Amino acid sequence: MNIPLALHTEGLTKSFRGPRSQTVRAVDGVDLSIRQGEVVAFLGPNGAGKTTTLDMILGLTRPDSGTVELFGTTPDAATASGRIAAVTQTGGLLPDFTVAETVRIVASTFGVRDVDDVMDRASITDIAGRKVSKCSGGEQQRLKFALALLPDPDLIVLDEPTAGMDVESRRAFWATMRADAGQGRTVLFATHYLEEADDFADRIVMIAGGRVVADGSTAAIRAQSSGRVVSAVVDPARIGWITDNAPGVTASEVRGGRLHLSTSDSDAVARFLFTATDAHDLEIVAHDLEDAFVALTAPTTQSTPETIR
Ligand SMILES: Nc1ncnc2c1ncn2[C@@H]1O[C@H](COP(=O)(O)OP(=O)(O)OP(=O)(O)O)[C@@H](O)[C@H]1O
Image 1 (cartoon, rainbow, N blue to C red):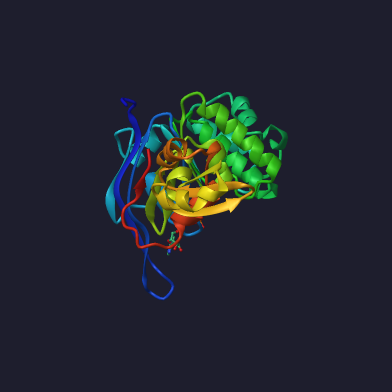
Image 2 (cartoon, rainbow, N blue to C red; image 1 turned 90 degrees about the horizontal axis):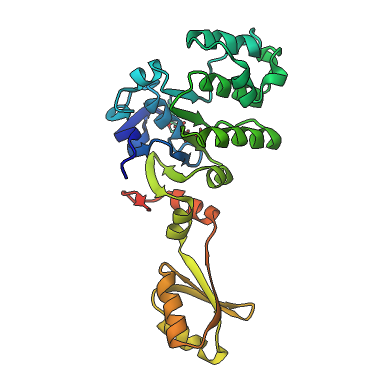
């Protein structure tokens, strides 16, 4: 694949001093490469290290070790040239300005004159005259999103962009993002909502305990992490023989008149059922993403990430 990289990190590491003076390793050797045009969800539970990683990518925090390259340059240079913009979790808005004033002020620093389109795309036209201090958390997130769109960045980084939004706003937000990403913008967003990652991203990078624990398409992660279940209608008298002889079966169950076989190699099990038995009405299903998320982000001694392609 010859699409150039938007982002490349190597060995990113960052520790903090915890409340009892202990060292908290927030990010522990994160390697990440994102190609231009990819929409990537950075998914992990609370405290996984998402914000700390994104802050280093944006140049807001310096790593203890490791490197960040954005479009072949440094985070500071990429930000200064407007190639990267972000919606972060905290700070950045002045409470006494209105929404429209805020957009205009920031627009002027980028030499942008027409702010109506951006305000429309971020769905803040209706609240243009409202003071920032009177905006809800979700409205402030939409305003930050508008500000991030102003430089027309090649990469947009969103740290839990829909935090504080109601369902309707959340839907509107992702509709806007989808439209934008469809025009070739690279998007990296942090979330702990599985549905957001599943619905919106091309690729999911799962992080837990400061490490990347899985990296691949949503479907691949679902399949790889928790295997698949092959089920079929079989001769009841042959169930014992089938479960003993089917290759790579980790669990079996008879339910609803069907034999269900859990396996990490569903092709081999399906082949066996069709060639060595009289099984029919065969179905293969992946465990759902929730299972994968729990399995992959549970505390573990695993030291290398699952690379899933
Ligand atoms: N400034 C800091 N000082 C001390 N510890 C910190 C600091 N920032 C982050 N941490 C710790 O580093 C770890 C990772 O935090 P981080 O905010 O990166 O996680 P996160 O995945 O973004 O979590 P959330 O989903 O809750 O926002 C946590 O244990 C957190 O308490």
